[in-house]
Length: 146
Image (cartoon, rainbow, N blue to C red; front, side):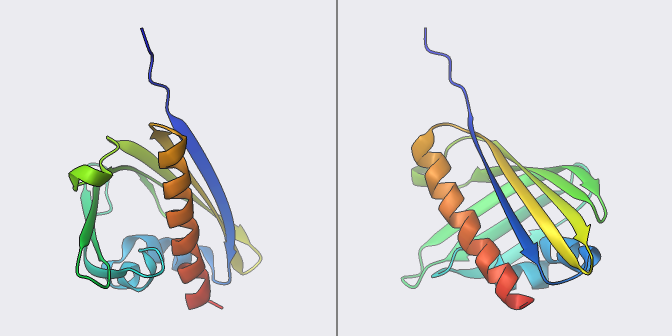
């Protein structure tokens, strides 16, 4: 019998903005549209309901118009310190099942340290793909506040 154990990743980035500003960049649809897709993709649509049990939907589109839809449910919402939410891809070719994202926002003297943990990924390939995607997103968020 094979037991499926998840793989997790952790990324840390310091953003040149205060904690509340960075937290809002993670929950406000208009701000998410500016950074919440890997470089080379645009965010075409965002819906958020940042409360425990609330849902979100992020539609990312590549240059050919192919959509990638991430959806989930907020499990913890602790303004301005922490967000925990499920993460699922709607497209079958990207589907890895329901995973979990935890984002911690730590005040660092006018800047904010973001610690992102993505858990329950099914394998190393999925971990690598998500790690690259998140790193690219964080590059875009960092550039907005440079």
